[in-house]
Image 1: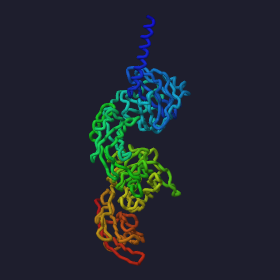
Image 2: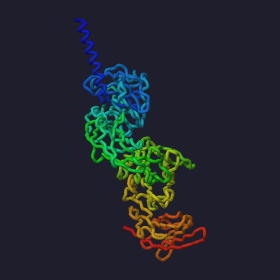
Image 3: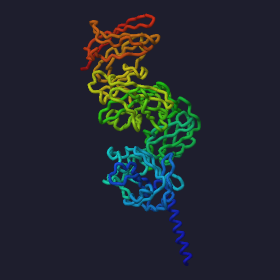
Image 4: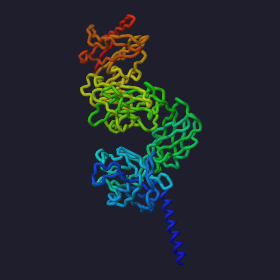
Length: 575
């Protein structure tokens, strides 16, 4: 009888262990629900990094063999034999900090506890067999509080039943100690995910492998169904593989090769997030194609805010004027010091990211602040940089390089390039007039129009104007302009086209009586084609009266050949 009883007990014990192990394999059964990544300055908790795990199931789970890791890093040591009860939590830290953290609740340690970045990082909880139980990729934006993001406060998950919805389910702790280790989170409440996932972008890893990036993790089962994805030009997907640990990416293998220089369309249908929401039909397709390395003038600086208001931040806008698809991972933003040396090399992104022909891209430390200050028509065309190069308020350099160190474009800007009647240039972006004209020419830059909100990040510039195709050697465009800074024909372009470069030009603006009012250019060497800008001001930087003016142009070359031109232009104003 005793033997039978012992056998029954053994079976029950073994069954419980097996059940624990089975439950442990169900993704999100255990979640990382609180993170102390930046404990300094101390608020009321020990000055150490730690995280908290919570059992989201109705059964107990043994943590033995679980590990913590970061992508590309070495996993921590295995967790000890510790049974985590239903809807309960445990603090995890280094062994030396167990006594200090045990004051707040049950605490276990692991060797090689992963160091957590203050500005953002990715943490992964691995099952004993190496699978992903839960992964969190956080940034300082998760705090939703600028003061608390500076340190001393933990990040808390709002709803542990909604473990994979990202930033919408996290915020800084509201507890006066700075966190709630070993307790229910101070921000705990129901926060269901009712938002459809979106396809953000695609990247061609090679001729037959494309990786899609979504704005949140997907249900890995549905994401792995190849027919859920379709391509233009008759390409088909032969296999689909969700990418661990976040499952917000899917690798697609194609039945044929992508062709260089061609832009394709890829669509996703039938995929859902881990809450069961189907993909947003308005955001289920994107472009993809093979990328090339950026060369000189493939990308140009198109707009820059170097003197923001106290509440705003700098931004630099790039424009892909080439016909190439470029990889932003292979590009760098920089500046020059007062000695002219290149410095502050900032990679644009650590991720593969396609930059398509004729697209804009805004680089800034905080896209949300830019969107608050200016009208942003295409938010997807903004990329956050961890730290922007310094761009002084008076003058400086904005430099774009490829990862081989070759300068792609460079803007030597100055506050003097602003429209002369701008009283205060603070918060006013400097805009490029023509993509095809030289970047380093002050005549190709002016202030963003007041009617456009003093800046047009991610959209065509308010002052954009192409040189066009002049009929003859000197033409004026437009023939009637209104220099009233409203963003509509604020200046006139004196456009020139010569049979060869090297001509020298003198340009004088005269009133209807023939009296000079502005010397626009003096002994200026010209390219074969280009333009000069008249902003409607005289030599004293005062507005000229409305009326008709004569633009007298004299050109000559080194052979002593001369030619004169007279063109008329009308200055008009609305007020």
